[in-house]
Length: 181
Image (cartoon, rainbow, N blue to C red; front, top):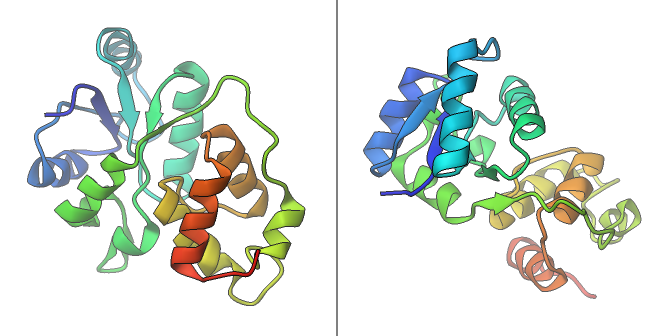
């Protein structure tokens, strides 16, 4: 059982999580949080901590951003989009138990003082920006690091904000697409 409470978007997400492992979940019901839902999340945040596990789509990212502003020490888990897509639908409920467990094994917490370790210029150097397959490569590296997919600006911000080390980055990059340093 996971110590923290998982924050998910819907009841089907809870069912998918329960197929993967034992965890307490709070359902947001989408982006329109009720006062009661926010109160329950706040209580869980103070009592046990929370892990935000939203869908890998724009609505999920909006919910994650909102929750992060209110609960800055929340932990984050990302399921790669390709592992959360089935039947023309994207969401936690579409992910396999293995994908959910893998995402939860790579949980990250935002640092209060983001570093400036990684730059957009480096993303070009490592072919994570500006190339025909840069988006796919960023997606794969983000999955390996457990920081999810993002455009270049978001990807760099996550690298710096989630405390990704240079060694972790290079290991993930070399695992996905070996590079010359």
